[in-house]
Length: 163
Image 1 (cartoon, rainbow, N blue to C red):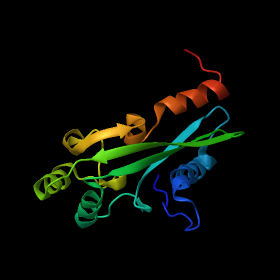
Image 2 (image 1 turned 135 degrees about the vertical axis):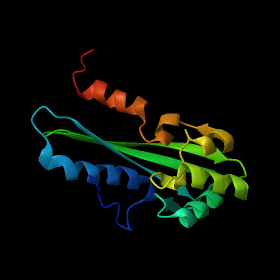
Image 3 (image 1 turned 90 degrees about the vertical axis):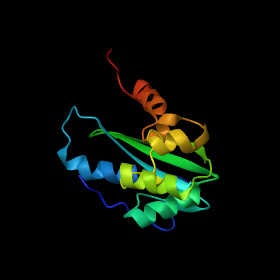
Image 4 (image 1 turned 90 degrees about the horizontal axis):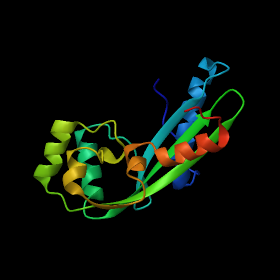
């Protein structure tokens, strides 16, 4: 289900991903049944006090990749766990450092991998992540879009897990 990904300008940038995960969950709320547990997530890239969401076209993807190459940025993934009685909202942040990318590498990535569904116009698991990311501080899975370690911890402490 497509959800409007707008957010209030007054919202601190570090809270946007969790806000959007909550917004996605609320869109599904009418479809939940008694035993359902809904998990939604959203990821944003923060660079120089700017949010990079999903690019709309090749030019915007190119601008984003040119902006983040050669420097560090933060990837924030927000997660919402919701059932009919409870909601748990949390986020995780990972710092990612890209090497300098040349025009050929950026254009090749955009043309062949079409990263229009990815915050910041890249996937860490894609070709550009393999050749362009120098280091990360934090969780690889947060950058992929779901901080599984934190999700598991919240599930374990708030729900009866059956193995």
